[in-house]
Amino acid sequence: LTSLLSLSIMTYATEFLKFAMMSVPIVLVFMIVPLIQYIGLVDLGFVKYIFPIQSSVDLLDYSVSNTNTNLILAYAQLIFWIIALYFTAFKFFSTKIIHR
Image 1 (cartoon, rainbow, N blue to C red):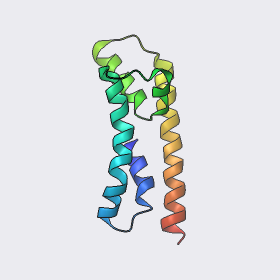
Image 2 (image 1 turned 135 degrees about the horizontal axis):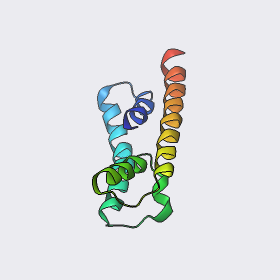
Image 3 (image 1 turned 90 degrees about the vertical axis):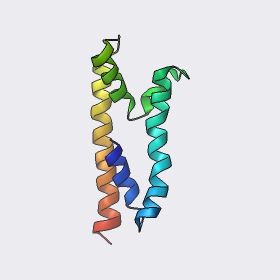
């Protein structure tokens, strides 16, 4: 998921340093906020499901500690985010790079 998000961001950069400066804050927000919620520092409630990485965190938590989680929601969210980020990355890449 983060690679698809990074591929979408890459289309706006012309050099690696610009890409790194643009992608690091965005990727960190999408990865750190669900992990902070997972360790219990904040309680995001239902808002945590808007982050793409949350379903992966839920599935990893279920596989390691067998906690009570909604597997159907986690799998559906994971499939949704993969498809959404794939088409977003494809659209940005095709319009910004291929059809210049």
